[in-house]
Amino acid sequence: MRRNGIVLAIDGPAGAGKSTTAQLVAKALDYLYLDTGAMYRTVGLAVVRAGANADDADAVVALAKSVAIDQKAGGDGVHTFLDGEDISLMIRTPKVSDAASRVAVHQGVRDVLVATQQAIGRDGGIVLEGRDTGTAIFPDAELKVFLVADVAERAHRRKLEMAARGERADVALLERQIRERDERDRQTQLRFGPWPSEDAVLVDTTGMSIDVQVAKVVALAQVKIQAES
Image (cartoon, rainbow, N blue to C red; front, side, top):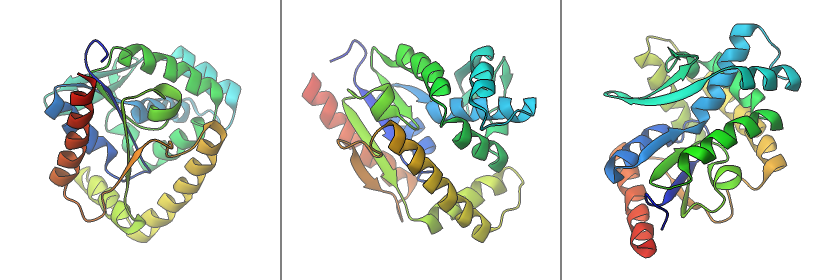
């Protein structure tokens, strides 16, 4: 057992319920929560703000090295900061989501962020959510969970998220964007290792309530914690 507990890595495609599930699982286990995907989104936002080309590796890596990215827990969840500014809502827009998936292909960006993530989680007692959590970041994580859900449900969830922010959304457009991002993410991941990792536990969240998702993952974690004790 690591000093503070196990490392629980949660991954999956966009809209599968990673963020909400991971945050609630971390709360149930009294573990630290780290949203690695938000870090890539933050770099994506920095690129959008700078008017840079997300496909220009040198420019994007330079930006990633120049900004300060941080996450802090608040009463309403974990907030992400870019150079001290709370950008938690800004990084959830479709434009930033697209930029994030494009900057994530650059090895230099991954090197910068992975080093930070490994330093935060090396002693365990942490739930990490996002790409590479069970491969490049913690290939030795005690538990890896890969959440999936069908495209229609993921688009519906995305629409509800946008509605909560006062944004209108076309479900058909969201479905097309999700399929396109899935393919881009799949091709990106093939460059860095299997996705999902071969030892991940697959959990299909289609039709599941968030409470059921959380209970499922907590149960899996408790089995691992007991085995490591």
